[in-house]
Image 1 (cartoon, one colour):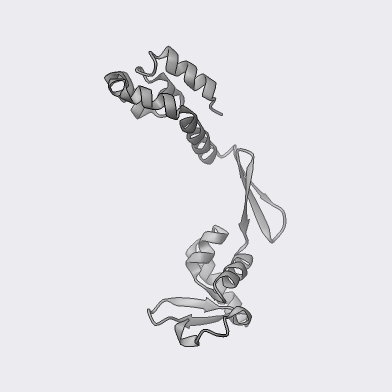
Image 2: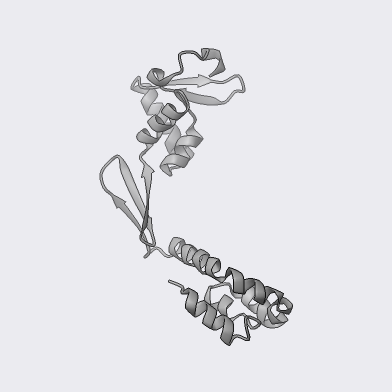
Length: 167
């Protein structure tokens, strides 16, 4: 994990930011070279970095957590939820069927495969297969909108006031 105090120390030791040591520390190698060659972009970039260094450290830590497989942990606590923890913070991700039901409830019974793919963190093909499986089991219906796009509906969650042609 990168540290704000160390980043400021390197900023100070690097000629108040003009040599770009803090940027090298944060993994910003190209801009570190640019800072070293241009004197921190004529000191303007060095001053900018002084005020934005805490945010830069936070972004570098997040990037490091996302790119480092040893810091990203996926825990399966049963079928309904998957927890993805990055740097100790946990974000729940719906399983496909729960995502479908939640989206259907939010959208008055209408679900698109792209919404499911985003909510469940799966591919569009997987989302469509899950929706097709729900259709084959009788839990959902497939419809084609006037625009030609395919959507799925969950009958018990449909808005009874909306005409079926609009779906």
